[in-house]
Image 1 (spheres, one colour):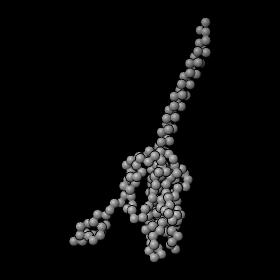
Image 2 (cartoon, one colour):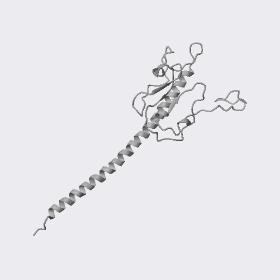
Image 3 (cartoon, one colour):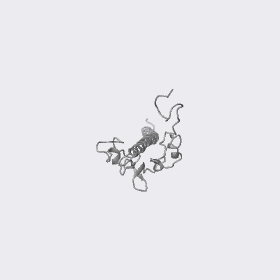
Length: 182
């Protein structure tokens, strides 16, 4: 005699086991997915900082070149950083224009009162992972709640981030590299 419902009970147990495994696997994949999202956002955040700093440095270099009677000026458009229209030859401050890595689109431009570009920022409303420990000159990024609050700006007359006042070397008339006068 076969026990009543034996095969049916075994099938029910196997189905229940498979359902539990599917739920556990789904939860594990969900956790891995959120970790992967965080990893990708952190990578884009680092790329945002690098690209923004490249734009700031390029704007500073563009401004540093004197033209037309010693005038210094900021770029009118980002394309001027790839090919300086003030020069007859090809002068580049950036190799190419970079997109905003957080949005994949255009940067928001920060302009001076005359409409010239002095910096860029992301339009992303996401909260940055990095909240402290920024390099010199970028301390104002600390505690910012959105990437759109990270402004990569060149201000004429202000020392560039990462550079402080030059320390004079004894025996030398001007600071900087070079041989020391005996």
